[in-house]
Image 1 (tube, rainbow, N blue to C red):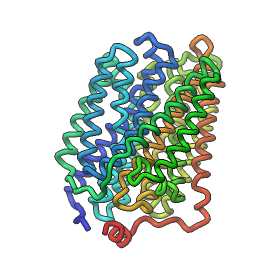
Image 2 (image 1 turned 90 degrees about the horizontal axis):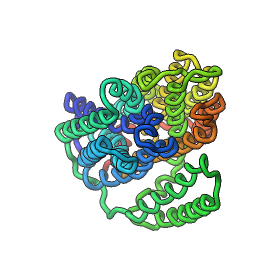
Image 3 (image 1 turned 90 degrees about the vertical axis):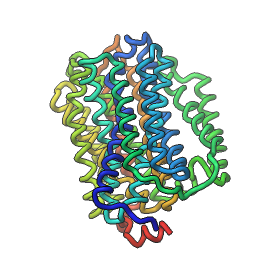
Length: 472
């Protein structure tokens, strides 16, 4: 068994991992308050501009399991640094962009940083003492909510003093600084896993996502066409082949056998639907805040007001992570995740009640973000209780992939709703009822995914003896 790190070295290492997680998570929401403005800046449609956010989510869906797999084989700390360097390169490309295509390339490179959090969780599991593990996991996993929550207000503040390219230059600098800290402060440990990378599985999985989401994104403009149906049928056939391929491959892109374990499968389903609800809430906040007030809908603000409305949600995300860990250690991780998902459902539904009061909109946004962060912070504790030590990076990477897929789906759903319900650039109450109503339904589905396991005693967190046996 590897000697665990303790004392000040553990605290410094955990702080550097947490910072890396926050920087990576910022990429998910940093451009959201800018989406209504990109059509004018780049001379594109609103539906096309939505892909500036969706492209990052899709890249993240591949990047999370990819970097988890690489981390298990070539070193967790090394892959965190590599992902952050890609983030910085993508940010620089985005800042230099003068067209939508170049901006999408930069945002895609940024999206690969989604693997950072799964790698950081794996570092915590393999390097920290068992007694410190639950709290370390809570801190690292909570960075997703913190980073995504900070993205909107940060972009609002930057845009007050700099052109939109400044948002990306700051992201590039933050990525490089964080990569340097990880390289200096996180020890490199010998990898436990081996095997060749499943390029076929990764490529087919990427193709399936594109076959599903690209035609879906065009429904708002063209409706359901014959080409859309053919694309979805091709995706279904490819998915069936992909599952068979992953089951037969010695070193699969996604370990389908491990993913079929009930606690892991239910966690992935919950991550998918909470990811949808979380991103729909962000989308609703951006457009609701920047829409002129009419018929009880809209706040009539700009990017700065969007950031101010989102700031309490960012603070709630910071508080939610340690709270979730505290409750999970006493009540059980599965119960904690289910409660958080129910909170997402209730908070999303509350957003439909008042759409023209800045205080109430901010409070409801806070409740959604806080509940989602609470859920995400407790979820890795379920996974670490079940997954073998050598597959920690891959399992957490797959869970983050499901969140990313959920966010990508939400981006497409949001684009469809905005396109269908727009009336000369303005939106009615029905627009936001759809956005938040779908979010509430997704929260209920996420909670229901945990229900089959509520009749059993809460699965305990890993004991020192369990961890020692797993690491032999």
